[in-house]
Structure formats: structure tokens, C-alpha cells
Image (cartoon, rainbow, N blue to C red; front, side, top):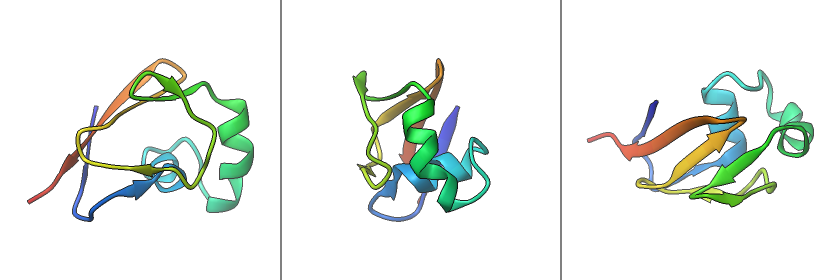
Length: 70
């Protein structure tokens, strides 16, 4: 699945909310510990981690590619 952003980056917690894995920002702290999240193939558990266009995020086996929307 492709996630398009129109900013320089998106934080992991924002991506989780945008993709429907969480419904509020407050759930992010728990979600990053509960879900198997990988950023470009590496385990990630920092909810404020910046994700840039070209990065790939995998959440519980579902892949998201972040692209810049022009």
C-alpha cells in the first residue's frame, strides 16, 4: 500500500493513525510495543521516528511505502 505525504516527513505515530492501526495519538505508545513494526527492514519502536518519502514501513506483515505527493 502506498502512503502519500505532502510534507518532508511523517512521524511513525501519525502513520499508524493515518493507516487505521490506531485511532488516537495516545494509543501510539502502546501500539509501538504491541505491533511488529519494521522501518526499511529494521525493528522500530519509537513512535516519534521520522519517516521520509522512499521509506518502507511494515506493520504486522503489512507493507506501506511512503511517497511524496506533488
